[in-house]
Picture (cartoon, one colour):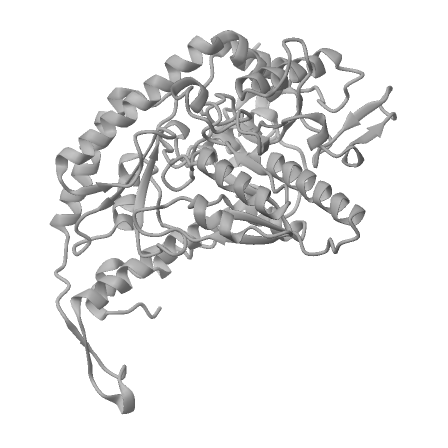
Length: 513
């Protein structure tokens, strides 16, 4: 006698995920669903959507590490359930963090003895590190002004206009005036002479960047230090320097050991660096190191005891995972000075391969420097047929994510493309990228529509007819692409069906959807 059984629709054990009822409807987007679904289905639904993300290793816009060794991946997963802040429960993790702080402080030439403990802390990233460093400068300045009986309500900080947005956040969130030194065409970093001119008695520090986000260039911290020393001697002030070494802090010590930018300079009181950039750790881990204990005001440090023991803490984030701290320690002892130097040399060499490949085309101006972060920033020599924004957009068809953006004030008219060379970007990929960029230019040439002068009605006074020149139309196209990039950054892109195409702009001279 044959036995049979009727399986219910909900019996997932006999159905593949794609034969089940769970994929017939859209996944929850606004409200938590009423019922549970099998774990295999939840995984598959999310995994399928994530396939539409870009490939991290082809994301040349990001400085963030996208590859680590499998052994480190295992350490990360083994410690993913540890809360770093619970120092009494996880004392070894705390010890590993302290070891990282000491190693990085010595790497930056902090004035420490061989067994002396450095002053620093691990953070979620350089943004938090900068917030902490800025707060230390502000509090120390305020305490001094109070002791002198002087006003302390109008602190300011001097930076270049090329700073990362986290400096603007610090200024806005913690009520500090941001005094920016404008850049200029051909000089895209902070001018130390102009920076020192902007310093006054209310300046809590001058922030220098070791590795500009825009073109990877190192600012001249040595010259800034010398000029500021002279001004401090003349005025009686003691304005200090903070170095934002988010990108360059794990590069300069290995590639340019003679370059003076760190604690060898007396006015450098704190330095931040991103472990998740050229520290070679997945996002997010950063570090901030102070020159001495005196440079971190004691009244900013909290002491808590409700996790089992007295624990000093100076962070903006309380609970956070231990994985990235452990991963940073792994990289420091696994690679050592030799390993980091080899990797940074490879990154630099591959950047030179890409740079030389672009130069051979004769179509680009190189805006990055050979000494700096391994970044290749470049712009089109001829912008009459298409713009950097169109090149960036078209490169996505080949899988490459290469950002295009304008320079900061006062060089907004200069647009550029930027490629960040990371550890996992090989010479083969560099050569392939050059080939694909050439293909993109050929494709744009093929579909180019001559931007002859167009006539539009109603632009002049009293309804008169105005002729737009090719240059005016080109400028409108460029502004359109720049607006698209800005909107994309703000996650506000309109649906593709509602966007104006370049062809429409060229044909109509405007975009009016």
